[in-house]
Image 1 (tube, rainbow, N blue to C red):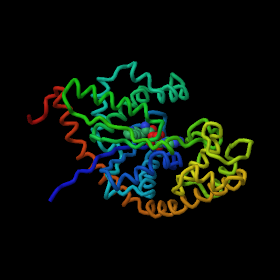
Image 2 (tube, rainbow, N blue to C red):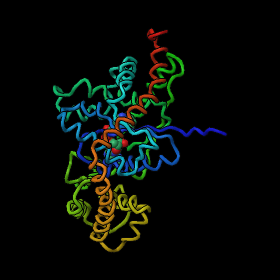
Image 3 (cartoon, protein in one colour):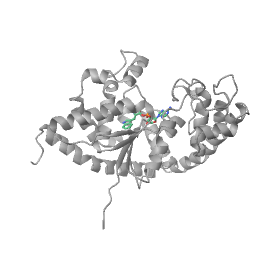
Image 4 (cartoon, rainbow, N blue to C red):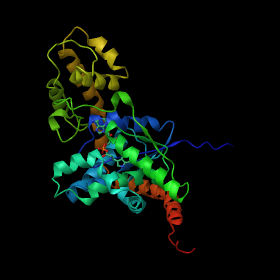
Length: 336
Ligand code: TYM
């Protein structure tokens, strides 16, 4: 008998809102689901990252459980993949400390997401945790020796830091970590805000965001109000017609075609029909998910049991890496 080892991927998502949005889904989570057919997948609800900005404890707990359930509802299979909550595996924080000790202050300070978020928070309120956030992200990935990391475009710089830290540790202390590759699917790497197609879709701009838990009527309304342009010609031109290109990208991703095929299908009709079609496909996509989610959350004890099992599985996978790291950097190991 030959044992085939599948290449491993790792990715994470923050429990910072009540619902996954379409940017999360098309940019990353839909790939999490398909990668299960070909890869050994480890997926994580990153609650340690979620406390880097001010938060409400009860809401965090609720969002963590709900996000876990949403991931199962979209098709992440906890019996096949390791799906877990980050704070249940202490090795993430342990490895972060070690990696923090080989990260330069300047290097961490160049992270654009930190600059953006700390500007929003105000420099007095930005925390040290927010500053070291990308180092924790590197620890998440390196702990599991992941070869690939399926993410959207906004995570590219954090992935570069993870690669640099893996290479630096390996160079100083001996080969320990797999150097991970970002797996970014170009077509859907950045889904745009419906109201401001120069920014990525994000929960911080509700009118421009489509969430998986939105009532269908809200989805229809928001898609109808999506900002396009005034020339009325349907063609896929992300440079000059970013709002329309975004709608075509969403339509294509949910119908299994290409944006150009979607443009051809609606050419000559103005923007009304493509907007109506996008609203239809998004609603048809979310309705069964909302149904599945209602079933999953109807049994909270079973959900917590799944979360605990995922945590145990992840902790077992992380243990050899943290043991090797502690050995290589010169810590005295218990019982040795
Ligand atoms: P987060 O929680 O902001 O987003 C989860 C995933 O969704 C992608 N994404 C998008 N993709 C396309 N268009 C958009 N508008 C859009 N908005 C979000 C993100 O790129 C991401 O893949 N730092 C990470 C969480 C994290 C992580 C990790 C990821 C922590 N540790 C280790 C990978 C590996 C974050 O905040 O993602």
